[in-house]
Amino acid sequence: MTGSTILAARALTMRYGRDGALVRAVDEIDLEVPAGQTVAVMGPSGCGKSTLLHLLGGLQRPTGGEIWLADHRIDAMSERALARLRRDHIGFVFQSFHLMDELTAVENVELAALLAGQSPRRARRRALHLLDRVGVADRAGHLPSALSGGQRQRVAIARALSNEPLILLADEPTGNLDSAATVEVLRLFEELRAAGQTLVVVTHDARIAAVADRMISMRDGAFADDSRLVGSAGGTGYATGTVYGSGTVYGGGR
Ligand SMILES: Nc1ncnc2c1ncn2[C@@H]1O[C@H](COP(=O)(O)OP(=O)(O)OP(=O)(O)O)[C@@H](O)[C@H]1O
Ligand SMILES: [Mg+2]
Image 1: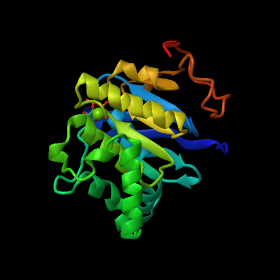
Image 2: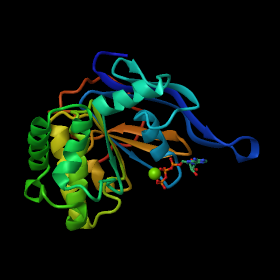
Image 3: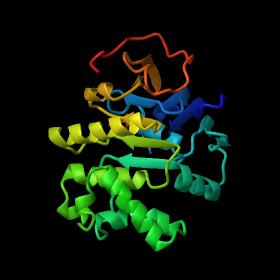
């Protein structure tokens, strides 16, 4: 693995069931994500996108292959070490937000830092800063039930950023949002990309092409296409030289 690779997978495989009922949810995938790259993963329902993301983020163990996060091989780690690595280095964003209903926005964002032993004052200051960064500072004291879908997702993104993750993994982050809120969240991803955050976003929304450096299309647990997007080479500064599939060239719309 090169110094600038944040995430790598080799022959990554996840199979469910056996014999006649065998499902190859993820089928010998190879992947390298350089630092600062924004990767969009698209594909039909059931092609293995969520499974891939869960494997990459150490939420699920593969049945085969290797996963590396920076210098850590995570597929073979103990549960304890893996939990610590997720806490310290990985950010997750889910379609259904997964906020704690009884905690305010700022409490949701600071919770992980408090559990990790940070002082309450520091955790609060940082959480408020993150809410400001995602544009919902004025909603810090609200419960999730008093927030719009787009605001909830922005709080969830602030929470995912609280450990300054090496990589942010998002599974259909706009799947529950209306069109206006989707645009807000996509804009936020664009900002994170500009700030150098490494991102993998699973989505059905083709508008993600406007904020991604690279588009991977999945079919039946494998990559059908893996393309660098036009207009993404300048500015982000991530390492070049990786060969991305054959593929389609998208976009030019930026
Ligand atoms: N726990 C499980 N047991 C058996 N099969 C499973 C399990 N979890 C997922 N699968 C199967 O693995 C395949 C990939 O599922 P996955 O959820 O990764 O798809 P997806 O691309 O995220 O779909 P969607 O777009 O609908 O979210 C599907 O065929 C699914 O039925
Ligand atoms: Mg899914």
